[in-house]
Structure formats: C-alpha cells, structure tokens
Length: 144
Image (cartoon, rainbow, N blue to C red; front, side, top):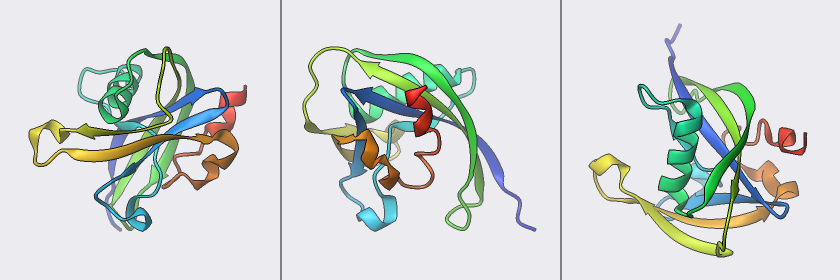
C-alpha cells in the first residue's frame, strides 16, 4: 500500500458576468497541465481563505479580488501522477474594476527557479467542465 501525503489546498472560482477566470501554463504542454483555476497550498498559520486570495493574486494578478463565500471542501487523489491526497477548500471570488479579456502573468515560485508563466483568460461557466484534475468539482455551488 502506497502512503499518500495529505495537503490542504485553496482553489478559487473567480466569476464575473457568467465567465470563469482560468489560466494555462505557458511553458508546459496542455496535455500535461490543462486549464486551471487559481489555487495552491495553504501555508502554516494561514487560513484557507487567506491562501485563496494570496494564490489568486500571485497567479493571475488583478487588483480588487475579494472572497464572496466559501463553497465547501472536496478531496482529490493525484495518483498516479503524485501520491498525494489534496483536501481542497473551494472559494467563490469576485473582482472589482477593469480586467482584460486575456493577459499574461508570472509567479516567482518562492524564488526556487525561473518564474512560472501563465496566460490568463475568461471562459463561459458552462465550458468549465474542461478544467484539469477535478478542479471543477464544486463549480455547481457557484449557482447556489
């Protein structure tokens, strides 16, 4: 039996005018990383809500992000890619002010190498079934 590490993650559904903010990794093929929503690890001493806002800002960059509400949690097993069980905390976020339809951003990955580059854009909520690795698990709750 393989032991899986359990990690807390915060994932963000940034919704505006019926569209969902997604990104793709510029330097990796889509069949490896797919379309994603902003999200990442919850740091020690950080709440999942704080992590959600931090990750959304780091990965996509728009000012004026705010948490509307928590949508719930779900577990996702990454095996066989990585023997990790993610406890995902999902949040609905809104963004105030002007935001482009498409833009590029970069995250410095905590100084651990070259910046990670992203192309950010909006897709219709109805098309969000294309999200990678179970990231769309609680998308239906954005309608509650």
